[in-house]
Length: 540
Image (cartoon, rainbow, N blue to C red; front, side, top):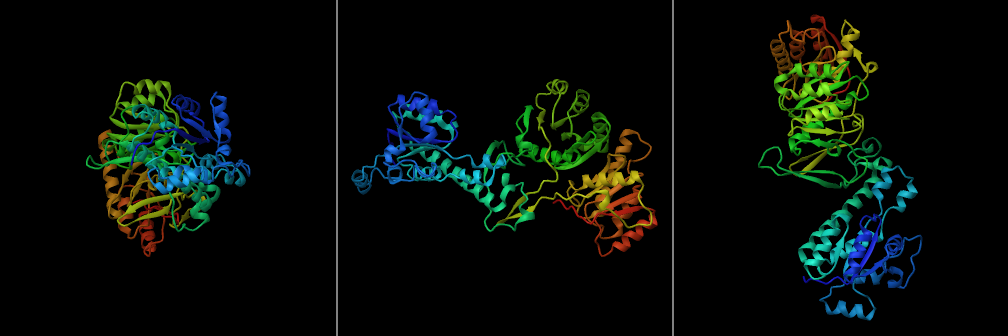
């Protein structure tokens, strides 16, 4: 490849950011500007001389602008190999002038879908000429420079200054790769919309699984938001990518108010905390403490400070170095309490000025303000890579209400037991399987996570509750009189018996085991009230 001095540039952009400044800089370097429609007008309004594409091609723009750059005098000028005699001869014979620089960004298809536009408007925002020019210019990057991102304009001008009006091979190759990534993402967005309809906005947050079967080819497009120091361990590289589509929200979109950069583990844990605390959106103040992607303390109370104290007391050992999420504005008093122990990340819909002042004293503490909490009932996809492929499933967005519960024991749960059952069930669906959660008066009393059998989870959670009682000088563990939730059915009565021995008086579980009768009989013998949900919540 050889460097080619830029003498003619074709500019056609939807996003006019930086356009006038770029046009002036190119014109000052003696570059001829060729443009279309609104881009040409914007350049002329900036006082620049611009040649219309219709003048270049000899054909007017037609069909409401649908046809303007799809012409041999455009694509011949882009695709011709300048060191190929036959190509040069063809250019001369057909009076095709070389185009050395293409500046294109595409019709705002993603934004049009995201704003809820009608189908006709969405279709009109499927760009045809733009991607065609981008791909032609990128293919011929040995001679043509392609620019698809306004953020790269300053670097382009630096290239021209450093190379006497030309661009380097390395720069053109990098811009070509970026261009193909953009058209790939653009086509993926269009394909997703056709596959999933108006639910497209985020391909990881659609109703596709309810409405359509899995598509034969799954086009996904993500943009790198940041490179991370490392992954789960220092020897692993890592980065975070976000969907190209507008309208997505979560930890990556939250504003970081202070603290060190978020690590891979921080992001993973903060997401787990945010997903769980979102279950309590609009309700009484709630606090979630997460450690290694599992909640180690959850509580909901009349004030955020009370909820923090209750959540912390569940497992104050594991809370050290944890992630904290709340469902309402974080106030100064709660901030003082949280700041009294070592915490990695705090995330809240809003952080008060008083809380910010408290956290400012701990410069390394990462504080995130996320705005609206994500919808825990939203649908979409969950993806996991495996050796040789990828597993894709619908999000676990299932939930149960009191009306869905079936009492299967002789004794019915009391109103308070029923309330604690539903609270424990909400937490359990966010705990790694096998999951057991004891809850008492709106707070977790003990959590058993990720064990190979359900009995061990029940025992571990009870041990943690006993240790908490000893730590705080209570007369008894909070599992006494608690409700216990199991994310899947009890395959044997042993796990339920362990929960009864820990002091639980009510049980909520999916049911569906071939030994349900045995488990129900054990519950009756222990005087427990038990309800079935009919829904399982494995979380691996």
